[in-house]
Image 1 (cartoon, rainbow, N blue to C red):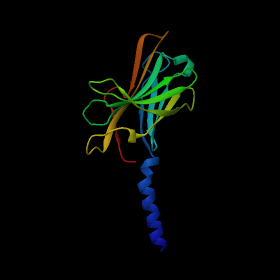
Image 2: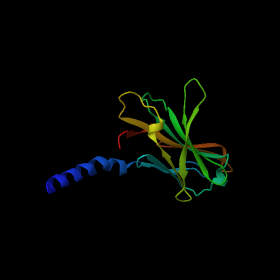
Image 3: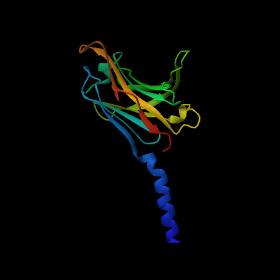
Length: 174
């Protein structure tokens, strides 16, 4: 009886472990002027949480109507990114929304997203993958993070992306 209980416990832990494991961490060089130069983008948990960390500290007030943090998602596997999570400032806090990036129509807001800041250099967003559609027989998707900002050190718009090329492949399960 004890052997069966131990075996069952081990099986349950192995099955549930991916949900709690860190999935991917992408580091980015200090390569863009402005407050929102990405340092790292990390995804973990279930539902998935993206942590976008910058080199510089910033406040929601400082980036209002000037700076945005995004995560793009390719859910159909066709090299086109189909959804994006948009984090924007309301002046005193960050607000997140999930959008469907449609080919021939205006983008469609799918839902509001939970966002928060754990320190002065990062923003986190919880993105429930169940709010997105995926291509048939998909067992993974791609994502990348991007920041956009204008201001004194970015007279023209500054963009930063992590990773700088392509996307990060992430498994759907767990």
